[in-house]
Length: 302
Image (cartoon, rainbow, N blue to C red; front, top):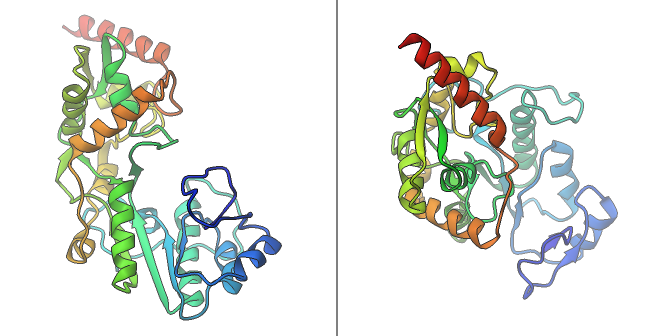
């Protein structure tokens, strides 16, 4: 295994410590014979091309891309042949909300040139135990802490993600079958909605916290941000991006675990870790202020 050595999750494997952005480090990796290259962190096409000494033209190369590659993200049922974002190769290497998807498209193109056996994985939000972003984690954590929980009033809004363990199984099975091409990796469109997530969090945690549903218009008027402030909240047409097709992956063996299993395992993980703060979601004092303001508006209108 080749990585930076920040995590030693497979101590039984021979590991080469190096940085993928350093050509000398890549040269160390090139001296080995690799069964497959699974590239989890290519953000720029340059990084893919740098692997030319490691990946032979007939090597099996797996690139973790993203469903963010699609151009029109406000229409449902995006499939692997839907139109992709176009971005210039000369675009400065800086990841923003505007450039992330485009750079992933360029990485995909570089992957196809690098190997005739490229497998392109386009996951939605990757969740599960040990997720350092805390986005999915916010909901079971928040519901298990506190007396009142602010929830956007969008119970039927669609919900899509992929558990990291289901993603891993699909990749390994695809490698064993010699799979190539692009695949959307998400749960089935329409399988879950926002209220399913909230309900699963209450069941798993046993929380008695009061659920306060706040209208989306009010939240938007107060500058509440989707995803960063309230993970999985996708107001308006943006909710269609939670209806991406996974038909091709399903037909090629994708299996996804239940929502409740994912919530339960995340809850067990962060409880064991004694996490007392999160990187994502509303700060407690801001949530309390929003609830006070909403209750004031509610009383005035009632």
